[in-house]
View (spheres, helix red, strand yellow):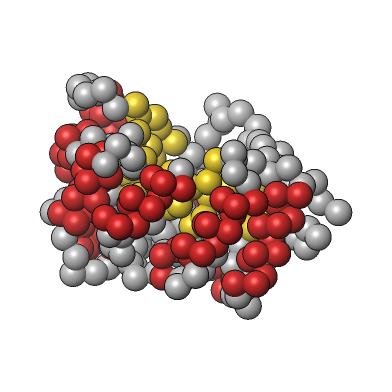
Amino acid sequence: MLQLPPHLILEVTTRCNFHCPFCYCVWHEFPELAKPELDTAAWEDILRDCAARGVNDILLTGGEATLRQDIWHLLDFARGLMPSSRLALFTNGSRMTEEKLLWCKEKKIELSTSLQGLKTYGMQTGTRRMFAKTLSFIARAAELEWPTNVSITVNKVNRHEIADMVAAAVLSHAKSIQIGAVMLEGKARSHPELAFSHDEWEAVKAEIYALPQGGVSRWFVNEMLCECRLQPKELVKAFGNNESRPCTAGKTFGVIGPSGYFRKCLHTIENIEWR
């Protein structure tokens, strides 16, 4: 029986109402990793196992997790099993309401979302949506004293507005901001034109470092290529990080995918039967 790490990411669905060209979900490359998608009872069994085996930090994500009609039941079920553990939901925010924000606050479900662009928001999400709803979601969550963590993926399309994106997240009172360059995994594997060289990424970081922090914590994800996965030599040469430390994937954290199999990180493709 596989020893589960204390922090798990549960990918409860592959469905998403956004179509981001840089989405790193590996089932875009390997659809077999996501089939069949588990039903409510199967996820309840997984949550029971997690609680029994000492997992104390769980993030539910997708795809877009709120497209599952049972997502609120699953979060409530998890909270009942693990009253003191950290539980979190990653959502693009498109289906969040004030009622759901208040419910998450009551249940102590941490919230995270992504800000893909401002003027480029529609292009970045593959939709006709505007960025205003995302910022309103972030701002209202802060007003309700349950602020949201914000992730920003920087690429060649939204590079010109990165300062405005960070400022918008700060002015919307995000709890924290995580900023990373596009990773060449999932859909992005087919869009290398979106990726930065290491020098270009350092220039982006320098621009962000120069911005006022506004009391909001922020940090950078410097990985452009997953080191937990065997990569083509040409990609390693262009995007590998020689200064990186050994990854703790599979030890301190791991992933259970839509079909209920374990992967040691979000970007690996080895499915493991863990029970």
